[in-house]
Image 1 (tube, helix red, strand yellow):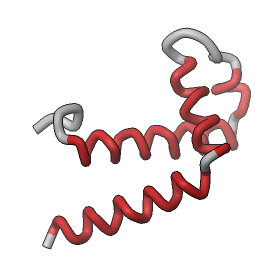
Image 2 (cartoon, rainbow, N blue to C red; image 1 turned 135 degrees about the vertical axis):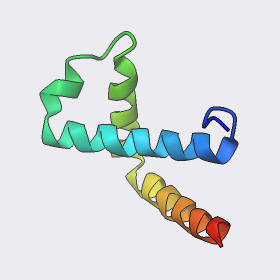
Image 3 (tube, one colour; image 1 turned 90 degrees about the vertical axis):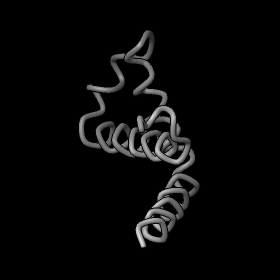
Length: 73
């Protein structure tokens, strides 16, 4: 089943996208900051979400990891 049609997988992909964009902006800010509009602006927006809501994003990552561990047994 595709990640787009499975809600839990979609949430996991979004969390990974937010965390990756935030990390890339921390390492190379010019790479993300130069594209604030258009399709590539999505990555800038994800990085901003990761920066401003980092406690909630990290809590969501922990919850998703716990759900994945329980689901594999």
